[in-house]
Length: 262
Length: 291
Image (cartoon, rainbow over all chains, first blue to last red; front, side):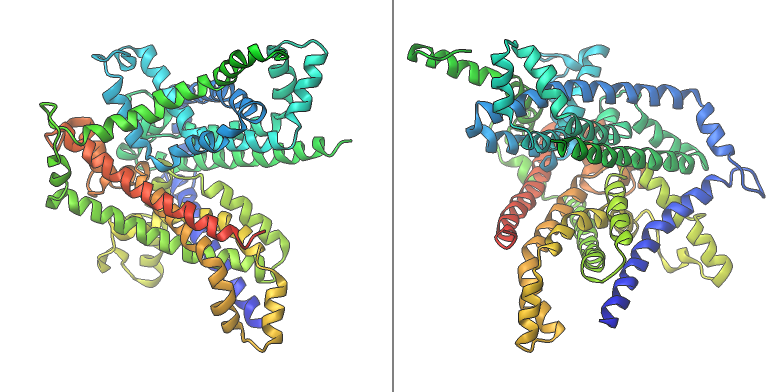
């Protein structure tokens, strides 16, 4: 038993070293901008960069649109499959997992060939079209996570009874959808939203190949041209990821509390 | 929506299908058709004639070496991630450690498995790059020059070490429930029958776990194989792996044959697809023990 405990601590020590050293190294490096002393200059330089503000704002907007339209697509589908088309469940689940199998770069390659300006649906022919295509590509990327978290939340509520109760009270389908179903799966919607945010905010492949001024390509550009700012940006990105995951834990804990209410 | 009389059945079926029509249209437009377009494009030449030439052209030294490096990096990072991830999961489930270590490691794994892409490359440049913290400390404290040993972050080994930062946490997250599923009774029964610790793991623990272990390794493999952002930010275009080659091809047709690009994409889908199919099959085997 003593040996077990020793090896367990040893494994944890190796893990902590491997994970902690790069983060510490990055943080230390980000403070080195001023010669001879530690300072937050790199962070100041990052935050005052107009391009940082613009690309970060652009990616925030894209993430928001992805979450809104993604959820408008995913929640009714998950609801409908549970209520009316249970035989389609395996198929829909399979499709939602496909983005994990097909690499993002392949998907966007398909878009570029299929929706170029000479095609029937020239998404990439205009700025608006390209932005729409980018949001669609982000919905595709986050489909596995959104669908799974919404479907898990829906498992805990009785969709059929809720729908019938609402229908008896004379509710039309928009009322059922937005005042019954959405509020009841809110914990799933929110955790799906936060993981989507974490994925979209620094996404590189789609934005770079669709030529949009997003945060991911900006990060790459800074990395190629500057010394200390990339480390500061990595710390900021890590903080954002940590924040998103923390919010997911908070939301799921909150969701459990409301569910256990009689 | 009342469907009391049978004449409404047809209309009801139509409504049922209309309900998931948006999803089907979305999936077709942004997932299925684009992929099929590339897959079918791989079998045609520029004149629109059916051919296997593009597939045959994949077997040229440049492209084969790209696939080979990609496979090596993915294999090494998935096996390394699986091994270290397994020991970490084992330590928090069966190692008898305080419970805050378990919850702390699981929370951190949730974060780190999503911390990929460009920032991850920055973190490792700041750590193991030529002026990174570890490189500098090793030189100043031990007089050891890491880069004189032939180590280079922008290489097979460097990329593997970097990829393990998201591979290990993913393994921990997937394997912890599997280890939780190992019943105490199995261990007690084997001990009563006189089995040693080693015999328990060799004859009971690992045979039950191997579908989970191998399956998750395959998932990690596919995960690393399709990744591009980290590699691109780390090495620019200097490391010849498949996603970077495909990226260059999309950007500027470096292969001088668009249909060869489709074949390159097809090769990626085949490799990630195969490893995912195997993963699903192994997971079904693994779930037999988790009832």
